[in-house]
Image: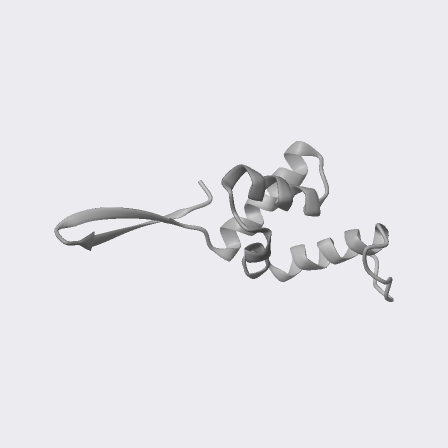
Length: 88
């Protein structure tokens, strides 16, 4: 469960909403990388395909550490220009 559940009362009805937050999404991405042995970029794309989620919307759900790991992956694949960096 990487979702928080929120219950709303609207017009005398209970509506359950699943909310994905930054911490939970980042944990889920880390778990996918480990379990499926895939790069971070692929883990995010896979999750978005499975959950019909827009890839562009994931940027605000990623912690800075995962964003840095994605940047390193992209540089290694020559998607981004390489910059000076400390070894991780």
